[in-house]
Image (cartoon, rainbow, N blue to C red; front, side, top):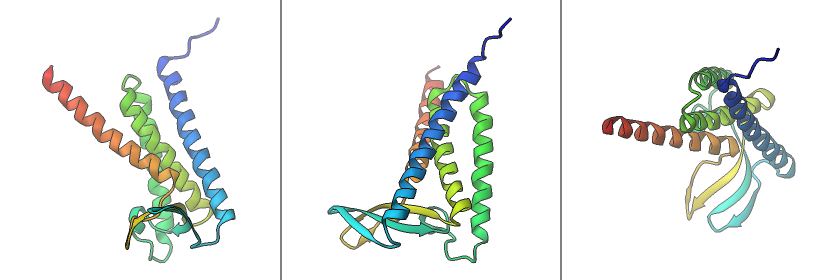
Length: 167
């Protein structure tokens, strides 16, 4: 006698597959830039965009990057705790696809950057946008996934609040 796979587990599998895809794409691009570029090297692609190779020992916008190294383990731990919390939410929200997609994007990005911190001791960044003398901090695929997930999370909450007002 076989048992049917619960609906939530199937959906969790899809979320985990997407998170894994994000991690793989993130790590492949980081390995490429880490081997093809020297630290600080830049390749101009557009008048406002370069590929580069930079390392971030801190968090977003190089927060705590100048510290002595303890931040590596703090941000690694935070990434792992965030991943555990996200997995908990994913298991409990099988019927909220937008919310789950947002969390899945954040999960893949967070674990991509955790891998960097464990393997390299810093996060590998290679996307650089700028205009004239203004530069946005360099970032990577994991950061893009985290940012898209965060935006989608806010959008999901706004749409959920709006639908509850109508009800």
